[in-house]
Figure 1: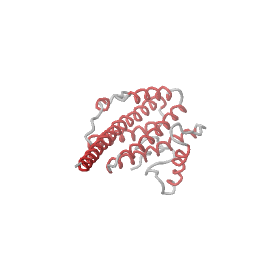
Figure 2: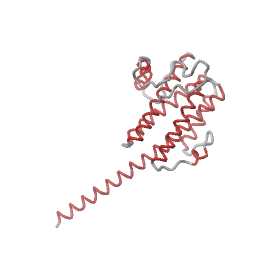
Figure 3: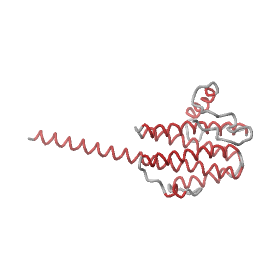
Figure 4: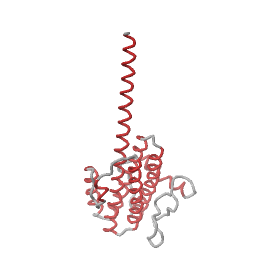
Length: 224
């Protein structure tokens, strides 16, 4: 009888732990979706603000890509029945539900308006942040559809980071990573050389200047 009670207790504990793990996983997944949704909005909003200040084509091109990322994350939220923040529903530039992202938006725009060099550094920093957070989101989910969305966005963010690094180099600046490790950053930058040979992770349509000859047209920083 005593052994039976012990067995039943262990079964009950296992069921409780399994349920708790499942709830934690779902909560983490929803949190990632909500956060990445607003983070893509932040990237788009900052780039549009900096394009209005400096009229540099890279900001215009990549903001278009971020708009598509923003829309993909909305689709992912709907597919997973995750509540979309009011800030996303209203879609007012520079307004975020997440207080951390709200503060970050103000800081990045202020920094980016100091000079074109500062603006390009801000762009690189945003892409570093995206890469870090997307990698974490990929680890947090076993859902194939979610992983696919995150991996596509990750590839595009790596393309964007390379674009900002190239433009900073033209300004005489050897960009040093602010968020990623030096080794991870170097791996992303060096993979561009492989892309020129038709290999690596570089997306279709990406050219040296991340824009066409007229500085217009479709965004060339996003993989298809």
